[in-house]
Image (cartoon, rainbow, N blue to C red; front, side, top):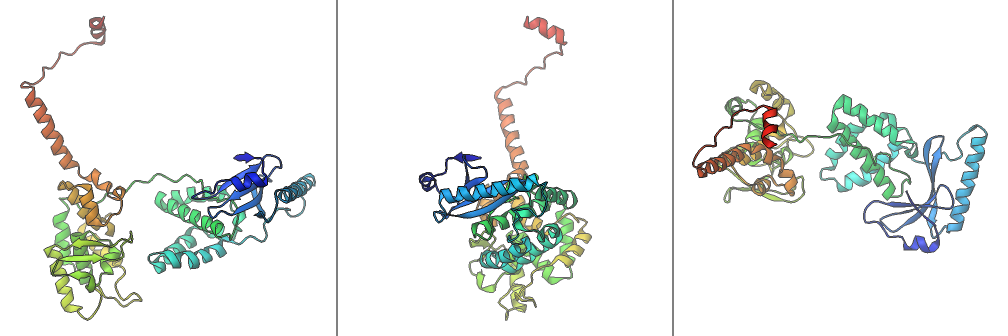
Length: 408
């Protein structure tokens, strides 16, 4: 907790944070503090435990409210709380935030003002957020923002982690943290983010891909697949390493048969990149072009987007025939990267092929390229032993006492 003697001069001299906010607490009046926002705004607040619960009240903005006025307000609240405590807490709490918005109201505002304006795919982002909230957050939605405590969030995190897995629990906490931060930054609510310091569960990056012994059966069943869209989707995903959404939303205008390339204009990282098209991919695309030449989409659909958005049902039936129920759609993309790694390609080349913007996103394939590493180690050790001209002699086994005696 940062403490200092709050004066007009010291508050004006406080540095503006680049990210997040910083709080300073007055060393004269208990509970009084000033919060500095990245925008440069300075706000007085009162923050103390009341009946064991952390309670926050916004007092006013500096310099509209002077330090002396802020101290008077804080002292008044301290006196009211002390009197309420002396009366055995009879009646409603004098510091209860009845005007604070409900979490459900803030979530709706977050969807409209944040997701709709900034998400790459607003409709999908809203659907995923609403699904997660309706499934996991009903106990908190009817609470006011200031009534949600860190213990509430921690218990929710633990419960979801135990029932639905660590990844689902962590995603919900990071989403809740973002909603609270957004409400604070846009001055919809002022308080302490209860999801701010929740320790996330450890997660392990998934490294499932098609192994050599699985490929024959996989391709055999792929050739028998009756769903033409699923079959072509899997082939293109295998041959290009593109994400599910990018393959299904591919446009003919982005595909060049002359240069044998496909430009992915709006990938996850929002940076367009070029995919080289292998002969197998060219064959699939030309067959589809002959049928869907009048449509702008490679995989036309009947929904609002105009193209297919999923192949889950037919994918599940396909996996049942292959005997690999643990294989996921994204693992098809990962398979190209893993086979490139096993062929000895460098991580930058793999990242370029998959459209990664960070080497960290490609680092998982370093674990998959064990065979090239094994070959390299074997060559080095063989050369080392050959340089010695003779094999090292094996020393006779000795007992511990004999070793000690020799050393002595």
